[in-house]
Image (tube, rainbow, N blue to C red; front, side, top):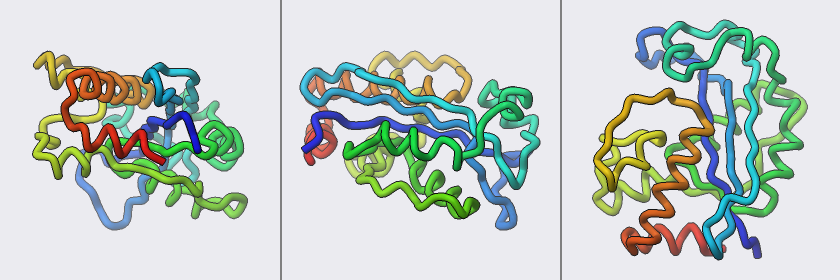
Length: 190
């Protein structure tokens, strides 16, 4: 039984105009995660890495602007395959929480590499869980969840670590305010 859970976020290569096309494969360019103690909801460890894509190694202007990631950061970054063991050890037996299907995209990206299998972890999509509870998910991205109770809508970069910390802030607030208790119980269960 794990005493921790993981909050994970990933950023991906993107289309210049934001339109999804069937011939474009979104490659992971950043993964960030925090390990949270279930008992006191404190962050006990962090993981973050930029990832060098192999199909579309040149970032679009849109994704550079959205995420604040430079081409030189990506050019110097390891390939996804090269951080697999470190990420797998960081997650361990813990449940993974993300605001969307980030783990699906990460595991789908492993199909590009003959060296690794998908990460075998239990995961929860907070976006879907909140939608079922009537939460206005279309108004909030992972990076703006922290503003749900304050109604402050700052424009921020879409950085994976900032997004993870925003999700953690939101989860801390819903636990403190005893709202969305079904979701809190689900995250803290094994």
